[in-house]
Image (cartoon, rainbow, N blue to C red; front, side, top):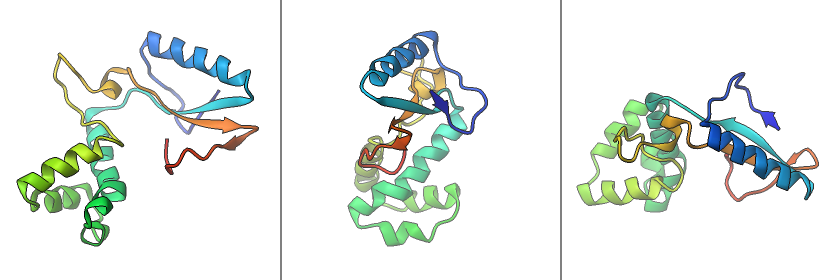
Amino acid sequence: MKIAKNEKLYLREEVLQKTLAVRETLKKQGFDLKVYDGWRSAELQENLFWHYMKLFTVEKFGLKEQFDRLASIEDIKTCYECLSPKKRRVIFEANRTYVSWPTKELSSPSPHLTGGSVDVWLYKEGKAENLGVPFD
C-alpha cells in the first residue's frame, strides 16, 4: 500500500484493519490502494470544506465565476456569507458530498477528526483508476 506524501498516518485501529482487509481483497483482483489521509485537524477539515466548495460545488449553482477569483479561504467564506440563507443551506449540503463539515459534536463527530475515515485512491498495475472525480 502506498502512502502519499505523509510520513505518518493516524487511523483508528478498526479503520486500519478494515483498510488492510480491503486492500488484500483488491490485490487478488489486480488492484491496490494509495492512502492519502486519515486523521486530520478540525482546521484542516474546515479549510478543505471551503476549498472543495470553490472547486466543485459552486459551479452546480451558477456561481463558478463569482468564486473563481477568490484566493483565500477567508474570501471564500465571505462570498458564501453574502448568499441568501436558502442558497447557503443548499450549497452547504451539496458540498458535503465531497467533504464532511468538521463538527466536534460528541454524539456525531466528523470521521476525520477521530481517525475514523481514510482517503484512498484505487490503482491497477501502478496506474490510478478513473473514479470520476479528480481527487481521493
